[in-house]
Amino acid sequence: MTTSLDIGGGEQHIAQMAPLLLARGLAVSIGCISHAGLLAPALRDQGIRVIGPEVYRGERGFAGMMPGTARLIAEMLDQRPAIVHFFKPSAYLVGAPSAAIARVPIRIMSRRVGNAYQRQHPFQARLERRLNRRADFILANSRQVLEQLTAEEGVPAEKVGLIHTPVDFSRFAGAFDRQGARDRLAIPRNALVMINVAALAGHKGHADVFNALARIKAELPEPWMLLLAGADVGERTALQAQANRLAIGRNVRFLGVRKDVPDLLRLADLAVLAPHNDGYSSSVLEAAAAGLASVVTDVGSNRELVVDGVTGLIVPAKSPASLADAIARLIGQRNLRRQMGQAARQRAFEDFGLAGCADKYAALYEALLSGRPAGSGLGSNADAGAPERATPEREVH
Image 1 (cartoon, one colour):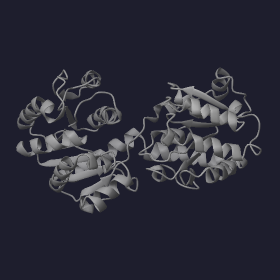
Image 2 (tube, helix red, strand yellow):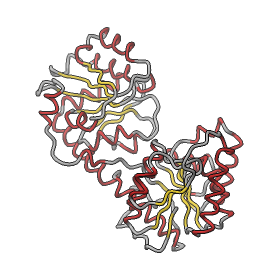
Image 3 (cartoon, helix red, strand yellow):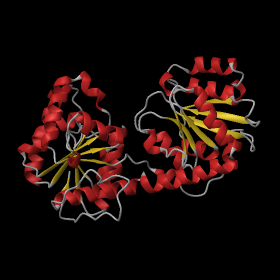
Image 4 (cartoon, one colour):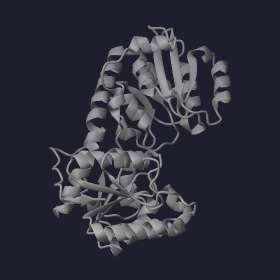
């Protein structure tokens, strides 16, 4: 159950998981409280039942969700699902009481963001925490969120688990013409290429990257290049001026928004991402899938996504000196850089792929359906052994 299936990170995740769960033997329906959304037709074509108003009526807040909520209560009373799994806090706030009215046996909530949003909505925060006490299980998509649920919100450890948000790595599989990709962008074949995939916003730390590169520019082998792929959120002019002032302007290329990010990553030699704050970064995972070692700042979930000293290097945020030292280390040790890149790629595909995520969901559902304690470790990358499969007659919504 979610708010809608319009295009966004959470919506894309549901759209990716539903067909995979269907293939694993679960009867899957998606309930949309506000409206069905743009992704609904493609899901229906794949045999997924999408329930909800077809047209967004424009009403904001809970009033706009009432017609969809009433319909979903009727559907749950009719279908008698074994599980309802909620995505999005707004869907949880109205959906969890609805599922209780319909007497759905098992209720799961997925928290995909930190709890900072609760400070702007104290009443909703109190309601959400009350609902958490009655939920059967709550899933986090990062250790940061997991720790907030237990340490700050009082959810018992045995009722929480971790399943990382996966990335579709299919675009990073198969043969790749690296030299051809470089030629198309007029990048010298022997150039050392670093890449940063992030919007040009102040908190993404591009200025720190420039300062770091300026500190070690005498050590960088010519020709070298830094590719910046991301939307301009008002910082491009200032960054261009900074690069010119630091005498690295000719080495920095602003590419803007790109549809060929997988190719850009695969033609590069090193990923450098230096945000001051962040959440769960798909850019870090995509760099790993491309076989790149990464230098990243120690913010958000980066310490979960990069194994320091194994798949990349982690440095303090807002520290150009530390950033420079890490970049110089990996630039100067080609074999180490390649070894880290290979380890990063293997870990990305094994631990953060779509199929593995679907397996973990199925294992969680099976544990709850059979009455086994799920435990705080279920769904995490530390899980051992193959997950059990759900049986066709059991339904998850």
